[in-house]
Image (tube, rainbow, N blue to C red; front, side, top):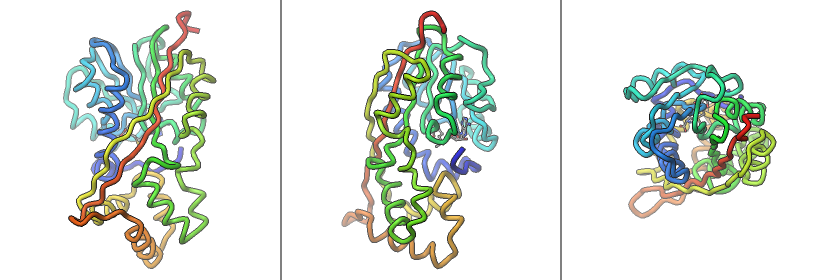
Length: 265
Ligand SMILES: C[S@@+](CC[C@H](N)C(=O)[O-])C[C@H]1O[C@@H](n2cnc3c(N)ncnc32)[C@H](O)[C@@H]1O
């Protein structure tokens, strides 16, 4: 696993406010039938589960995540009798086979050591003829808030490239489709989802990066105060700041949906 996940409130400020917009867009893209049984893998603080409750009229949603601080945050926040929040990892889901109509996962696949194995687990949990869908940020280009950060970091320190999330191969549409096919999913459909990321000002952009969440946390932990200050300056220099002080960017994600075999095999 790559990335640090430890604090629900810090995650919400750093990424949750944007992953919630993405989750709504993903549910619209999936255009699901009402009354289905869903599993949300790597559910974190509950962004996608919440979007399913609001946009998919589900019969039930099982939200699974290994980070206790996030599952506690999700439990406290969701409070809907259709939701069960469980602790568990994508590679070994604590769920019976064939029990979900749809298995979904947002912003998780690239953090896993073996995405095909994790997708295989999602296939196991879905019923025959059910679906598995995942979204991942387009770190290489269209996820602008992270692109600015990593471009600034690499400009000052080429070794930052080791941690730049653009290195995740599965975050390109061709590779995403390939891992879906490798996990035995058929009729794979790829999509592109873009959401606005609007920051009130430069501080609203920068301060959440210091909250210790995600892959950026691992890089920032390496830097002393002076190096962090230099990076903050470099980031500020690159940000598109409007006359009103706001920073208006967008974040693009790739999304894939595949269908499990009717035989269940
Ligand atoms: C970027 S967050 C995404 C959370 C949520 N899906 C969202 O869209 O906001 C990545 C999540 O992956 C979870 N995660 C890390 N390793 C995992 C694993 N092996 N299996 C499932 N989830 C994992 C983390 O706990 C974290 O909640």
